[in-house]
Image 1: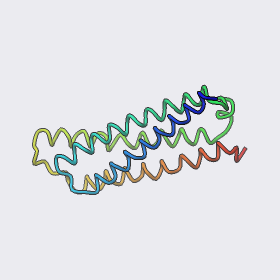
Image 2: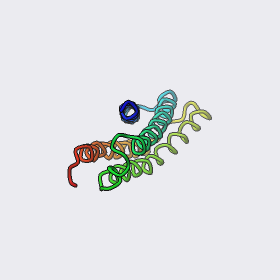
Image 3: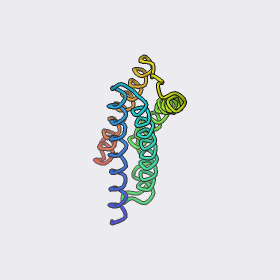
Image 4: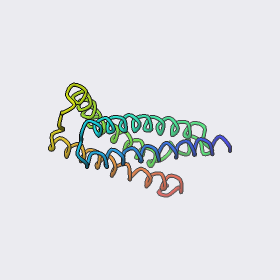
Length: 150
C-alpha cells in the first residue's frame, strides 16, 4: 500500500510539473521574445520534457506495481486513450522543441536575433493544442479510476 501511495504521489507531482512548465511556455511565448526570453523558453521546454519522461516512467511503474495491477488497467479503453493522447502530445511537442532549439542557437550567434512574429504565433498555437489535449487526460483518468464505462 505504501508503494502504491508513493508511486501515485510521484506521478501526480510529475503531472503538476509538466502542466506548470507547459503553462510557463504558453505565458513566455505570448510576450516579446528577446534573447533572455528565448533562453527561458528553451530551459522551460527542457524541464517540460523531463517532466513528461517522469510522468511516463511513474505511470508505467504504477501500472506494473500499483495496487490495482496491470490486469485492471489493460483490460479496457481509458488507459489506451490516456497513452494515445500522451503520445500525440509528445509528437506535437517536437515542432516547438526543435524551433526553440533553433531560436536559442540563433540568439547565441546574434543577440539581436528577432523571432519572426508569424513563427512565434505558430508555436503558441502548438503549445495551446498541447495544453488542450493534456486537459483530456484527467478525464480518461477519472473514468478509469471510477470504473466507468466497463
